[in-house]
Amino acid sequence: MVIKHSIIKRKRTIKKTVKGRKNKYDRTKKVVKISRKKSAKTTIKLKKNKKNPIISPRAENTWETWQTFNPTAILIEKKIHFLYRAIGEDCLSRVGYAASDNGSDIYDRLPYPVYEHLSQQQSFPPKADQPLSNNIFSYLSGGSWGGAEDPRIVRVDEENVLYMTYTICNGDLRVVLTSIKVEDFLNKKWKWKSPVIISPPGELHKNWVIFPNKINGKYAILLSVVPEVEVAYFDNLDFDGTTFINSMRGFGPLKNNFSKNCWDKWIRGVGPVPIKTKYGWLIFYHAIDNDWSKYKVGAMLLDLENPTKILYRSKKPVLEPDQLYENNGFKGGVVYASGAVVKNGNLLVYYGSADNYICVASANLDKFLEELKKGQQPKLKSKMTRKK
Image (cartoon, rainbow, N blue to C red; front, top):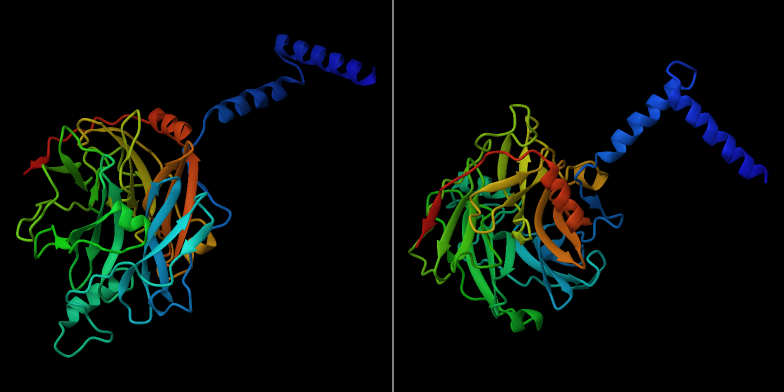
């Protein structure tokens, strides 16, 4: 009875406060009002997993003793498969494999690399007949002296093949395409198709990703998002090694950016393979502001039928380096998202931290998309398409 009486008395006090214009409770009333406004505004963010990092270098495997980072991810048969970049004692960049059922606990990780780019391998330290400038550039590319970096794997329209794009860093940066049958991938029979370079010689290109569905009946490759979104369309992905995709390879601000003080003043490239949603293609991208030592991740929604059209873009980064494991490593201050899947309604984004570890951040997909849509809708369009 005492508790009931206290509640009734409190209700009367609040009622009197609301009616009164000037009394000692006015300040309390204003605080409640401001608090409600703040709670109504939600920030679009990815929640970092408490188990991070989920993959770290292994001293017993010489090919991945130094760095394990920048993973791609694909969901097949309720299992999340990872292909990740690894660097070991010989300073060559290779691709390793791991898997998870719940997205954060790794239960299957192979002790050997599942993919290597063997052509024009360079030695460490460089030999006398190797151009010093090329070797220096390769070493600056994430710490390796050559090999394959930053894989992105995708299955297009449930085909019986998985396509993988990656970057070779043997003195220059060019995009390479290979593939593997789904059953071989699942059975760990690493019968990769002979790799073919698809970007032009003498140019530096990275971060090309293939859409997981054909668009208007054609395979689509997202090449760049700056200064405008650029997509190339093809009837098939059977490149012969003599035909290359021309691209601007933008680096800088997005055309008609939000403001001069925007966080993504300098955009470096696209992250994971696009995710098809009911609102559009969900894209993550890497960018920096005036502090070039910090990589941050933003999100976009592109039109489903015309992905050169940006529908929405996050006004603030959805992922940024604020943890110890993201600021201590080969390159501290870097979060580099390169894999993403949707499992049981949850968005799981995988990223390399400090060019040393592999981490995961997550969000409810529907809530994430709704918050992304609440942001300012920029008038950004592009007619830049390339057809073959």
